[in-house]
Image (cartoon, rainbow, N blue to C red; front, side, top):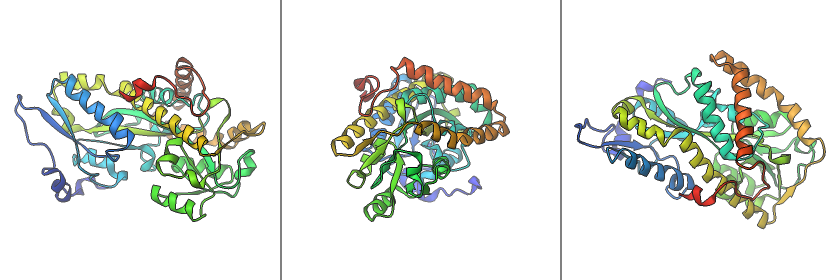
Length: 366
């Protein structure tokens, strides 16, 4: 993609300018954050907005963030817009741009030792800082945060998935390119659809099910069309989505070193924990809502997890090959990541049944 060809006109109409004007040392630096979720979405309300307030606080008002009044381009182009300087800060789902963040998508390798989003998020950030940064997948920007979203579960319309053979031939909405390969490996038919298309396809009987987190089901209002949910045993995570938050390199360099350090102090792992607590809270609330609506929590047959693990083992091998090609010590990175997930998950309290909130719900809302 030739990022140098990005036009500035239409975006400038929304922002008034394409980049902040040069400021004197006494003027505050204002950075434009591309709107990545509607203002009423929990991610915008409970993660991004509080973080923006923290940025102003820790820099004593010298750096201020302003959210665009609407998304300034396709969700898939968020990273490109930050890279090109069309916005100062942008975030997005790593899997929304297949083929770009293949190393950072280690969070989508299956059978992680916890279903706690906080454990996954902390492990993902630490692994990036220790190993994955060598792949330079965020080159040209200053990466501010990485974190996970809720774990994927299988939800079906008419047929409960008790044994692995039960999913064969089912048309399932796929969460990502990696998620689609996982579904294909067990005989399902992955279907890529936008959020509105998923709702429409379920209502018309085109889909047999979906693979997504609890909060995705309730946000899209899919409960009336789904009857069963299948989870792995012992709270193990099947696969997690991943999010990034990154700043344009030029915009970042316009901030003083002291203020950069202050912002990094509330970003990185601190941001990952805040975001994860919110995703945990929303996922737990959605799980309770779905159970109350009568969606059946399927108890899988003996050997289900082992069969699924065997069928999807190739995903680890493929990820390691891509990571090695990108200059990462893949074996050490994957081992470290999985161990950090396990260690952090145990520290946070271990596996929990669906609907129980991990951690302090009050802290998540702050």
